[in-house]
Image (tube, rainbow, N blue to C red; front, side, top):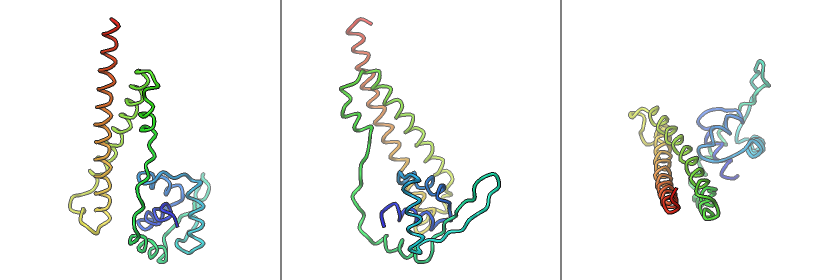
Length: 185
């Protein structure tokens, strides 16, 4: 079992879902594609960690719905007692920042303005989630508490990334102004 498998079980512990819905629901936590998810679902179904049934649909192909079994719940509970693996960082923006000296200032500004828009969208997304979690449901031990602390983490991270992006853009634009003044533009 890999981390993605446990993540899928965790989502199914909350509610039944199709493979496609699971792919959408896991994105805030873990980047995964159909090609990764469906083989794991099949394997976990073989191991009786989850079950499935088909739902007939009109105007669309039938949909397979997955549900966690008691054996799957037990496996998920056991996972909660295992040590957490070190965080893995895969950040293309950091790699591009490392190579920033190779590009023109206008392109650099475009990169950070584009990423700034993305962070702003994330910030709004997490604010919307938090607005939908009533304060009286944010108690330790409830599913809402998990949602609350994860959405707060997402919001804080988006705000930090946004602040950093604004700082970098300030530096780049100041450099652009200084260079333009130097050349009499």
